[in-house]
Image (cartoon, rainbow, N blue to C red; front, side, top):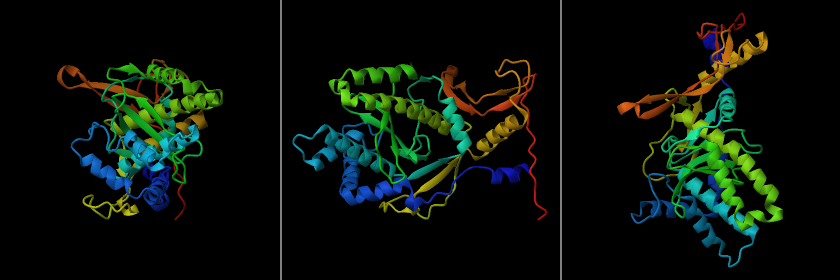
Length: 348
């Protein structure tokens, strides 16, 4: 009965790959800028390319440079400069995503727990965040009006820094703006990184323009939510107990000429069983009320909230792995309690 409930329970939506946001964006870009993707592939193979190819496939700067050349404007206005930057960023992101074409769908309840967990501050260390491919697309309703996020690493050549780059996409496949996080070379608190980047931006003359003030404040407010959620998502995807399952079977082998068809897209579901476990906890709390206590040292039954657990391993226990622990009900002796699930079945 529990297994039947699980199979019916996960909130995983079917993906219409052809009409998905990333495929729409790619189709539009190939019509408007038919030569860019071949040029990006050619430049990547150039041994004299100046960016760190272990970080990204197509830097944002390369896309923006191409967009500036295409615009051919001597003195673009602020709005035109903004549009050129968005176009360049879109091209760079799509050039990176089309190499593997992966779409990740999150269980809704796991997504909600990751978002709650992201409200806590954390230390960001070099090498802590990884991405399975050059760029992935994650379906999420995290930002209003957007259907998902493109996530990749960027190498900012001018500043010589590695960045986490996040691009929200509308259902129509349009990238409105993007967020980034400079990845430190030494362990640093996330809140310190965010505050430092905002302070640097506000120190620039352009950010002090009265008409831009409300947009700047809103940008950094939304950016914090997107960055924190993305970090937690990437940690989950790289955790030792991650739960990722490919749900479609590709009808081709990834080699040779890229055709940019829906058959090349790999769809992965994330957190099906974990989401089911979270729903059991939430249902129990709704029906029986929140158990007393409320923290991990409580001597009475309580809900232990979802959290990260770090394990030391390797030579001298110098390396770290993370494990994401979902919420669980714990009794007074500190033992995890299994919540029974009763599923009503029809006579058939």
